[in-house]
Length: 280
Ligand code: PDD
Image (cartoon, rainbow, N blue to C red; front, side, top):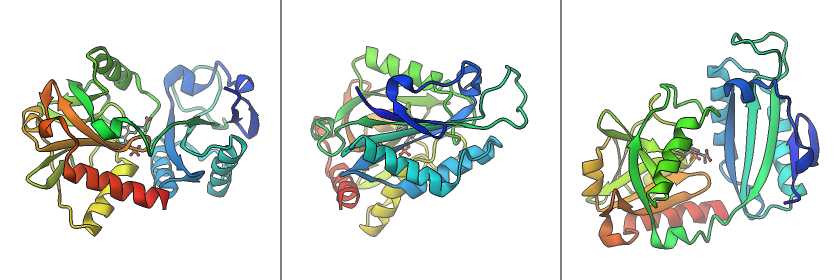
């Protein structure tokens, strides 16, 4: 693959990107992360991602690994060194490496790593035909508002979806959809977008935040409330959002065709608005 990656202050060839076996991210999933899209070599929604990182770190009483300016410079340098035109920057901070002990360690430097991944975001063929989702149980912990690297439950959910031939799993808790395994979930009924309100039950998506702003600017009404799978089956449209998929149409949920199996007009309009801004 030949990438240059970032590990604790150094830019190194990816095969030399190594961290300690004592790293608390490795031993306890004691770390947080962000995924920021890159289009035309430019970071998309960088500010909101870093605001959320700041919140994740403070909720877990973890230190920033470097200054905010240094982190931005590191993102830009990685994009430059890898000549990344379109894709993502993944960055992760952990509480650092020290002898295994559950309690927070003292005087340990956080670990900071980052790498790029080339992806086709704008001309993603999935966006043309739409994707399918299946519902899976939400077996995660109760602080999903923190973007923690503890992702085993989403991994299990995504794998279950994949094994059913679906693109994403919509997680269900107490009869209501929380969100996708790595995305936020939306349905459209009678022209109105419905998505779960923010709480500890879901991650506050940066793409969700941009979508809310664009919807407001363009007169698309969004209602924040939980919805059931049955309501989703009967929806006019459905879609998901994430930094790596933007606004992605959904045309099938648990084998129920949505919108006659075609991406709907509200979804297409919102994707278009998002792309216009991100590529502009
Ligand atoms: N996932 N909900 C969950 C559980 C997520 O993991 C993500 C993002 C989102 C959408 O957030 P945003 O719009 O800020 O990307 C919602 C990233 C992309 C990932 O883990 O790869």
